[in-house]
Amino acid sequence: MTTTAPPDNTAPENAPSDSAPSDSASQDSALPDTAPLQRRVLRTLFGAQILGGLAVGIGIAVGALLVEDMTGSSTYAGLAQSLFVGGSALVVVPAVRITERYGRRGGLAFGYGCAVLGTLAVIAAIHLENPVVAVCGYFLLGSASFAGLQSRYAAADLAPAARRGSHLALIVWATTIGSVFGPSIAAVAERVWTSWFGGPAYVGSMAAIGVLCLTTAVLLTVLLRPDPLLTAREISGETDAPKRSVADGYRMAKTNPAVRTGVVAAALGHFVMVGVMAMTALHIRHGVADPEDALTVVGFVLGAHVGAMYVLAPVIGRLVDRYGARPILITGTAVLVAACVVSGSSPLGDHVRLTIGLILLGLGWSAMTVASAALVTGAVSPAQRPSTQGFSDLVMGLAAMGAGIASGPIVEYAGYGVLCVCCAAVTLAVVPFLMGRIAKPAEEPAS
Image (cartoon, rainbow, N blue to C red; front, side, top):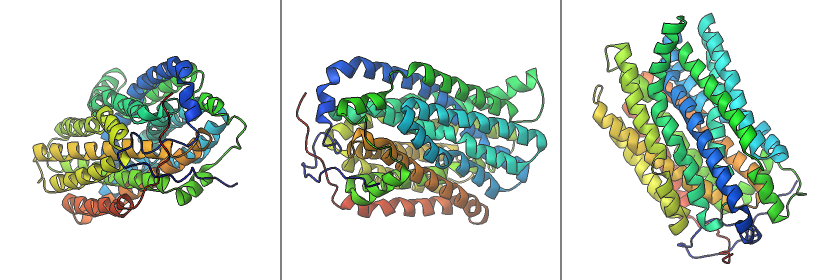
């Protein structure tokens, strides 16, 4: 199957959008009819992101601690975290197929459904004291992270090109509410579950994740109607377009400079964020004597980090709409390097400096994620979006797994500071792509 890249036009660098598809003028002309639907889509996605964000926040907070307790090894703890954040790689291929056939509603519900199965596997592993099953369960549980990331694309399907960054950033921002409180809720869930049912540690956290993911899947299935992606295809006249796969997204990235730059920027930003974040909980615990106090500190520091990932997303989205994706990607790269420097230089017990570093890490990731998503989405037509966006998230997931797998041994044998230095070096790999030319489509006429 051959994928055709959008035309190579050369709008000025400060055009309102880096990424409006060449055929989307017809979509914008119908916006007066689709505006009420877009508002309903945004409300539904906003609520789903709160619930899904809670689940992801809990999973991030307890993953490394759970596996280290089961194995006694930081290496395996890093593996669990990498599989959680990178679990999207497992579900991207079938999720793209489902999205092509049933729209965003089917793909998102599938992701959260896989996460429910993951929580059941982890709970079984805890009772069986089997770390292998726990790590596999975390891989499935990471599907919730995939679904949360895909939601930002669903918000952009019916958005006007001039506000695409703002709309998808609103859904990224919605995750703030759940993710900030998720790590702290882990400790509350543990206490409640223990007082009611007893049993081993971490079961309460896993049960809370399962309930949240199941509720989110049901919410999206019932309320995300009519589907935004299928509606966008009807508007663009692409309802009969051939169904595409992740392989078509790969071919698009090879031929389209804007897609290629967006994919690389998203992947490297995700790699650095996961690499540093995955080992932060262990770095904190190694400097705190009381394990219960460690979980509280972890909840605060990671809550601040996850909050920074999302809280300024609307501002970043507006900046992308106004100045284009490239300046925001360059700024995000600089912030990520600064985050690695601050985090890596924090000694054990210095939770203030570490918190500042993790906040910068979240802000840098937000800039890279919002800008790259707007760039990739606008560079292709509605018929090409699921495959191209799926390929981008697949690469992000693989990058996350690589970061988590590498971070454990680095911390165990060289220390947290060396890990941050390595991540700073990886961040700079995106610079050649940002310095190259990004083809832009022509500016769309006002509707």
